[in-house]
Length: 279
Image (cartoon, rainbow, N blue to C red; front, side, top):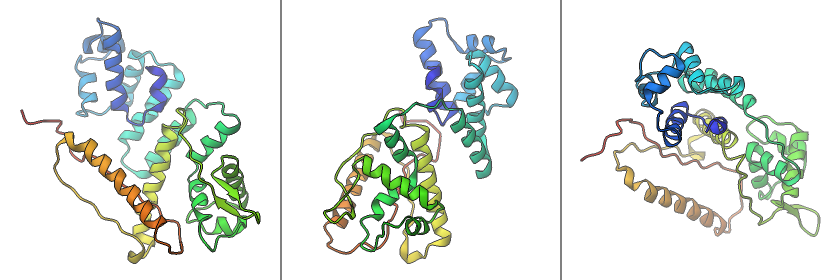
């Protein structure tokens, strides 16, 4: 269970999973047992923290890491994870998240796995692949770098194209021009955690920035806040997936010339935490 700590971005969820894992493997484990192991004054401390009714102070963090018998690196990750979740400002969240990324054990990728890792963790790789479909695209690394809304340099643009070619996501036509290939990738298990989380987090920030620097006629940002039964979530998620597929098909079958690369985000998440169901 501790080995999975580095995949978590929510310390309360980690504590819930840790508690359940301990209960499943040690019949003597309880909230009281945990409190005794960490030197906590209240046997209910772990429960109220797990339920989001109380935050963790630096002193309490040390007691929790002691109770869970985390080593130095694990304890440091858990501490920064707590600070990340409890941070009040974006700058503080950035600080602790960067520390989490540094602390996460590095997987030794080689060859194609290394290329796949880069593809899933560098947002400009995905965008450059889509840029190739634009009729005015130029395989000029300076040109590519200058047309992204965030900063990369020409060498990074070149490296991205090299990786995309090796992955088979791009290839060349008979005249040597870049074109999109029909290959697909499956996410490596080691990648589907903090790095993918970071990609989505970066794209959500791009969406927020677009409200300030993109004309209204070139964007659409709306939201819907409604009460709903949690049992309908799988059906709604399936419907959203179908909508994405329909948009892709609509664009692909339009026969119209592409102009820019767009990012479409869909978010569905709870904004209350009652956890109550009608009996």
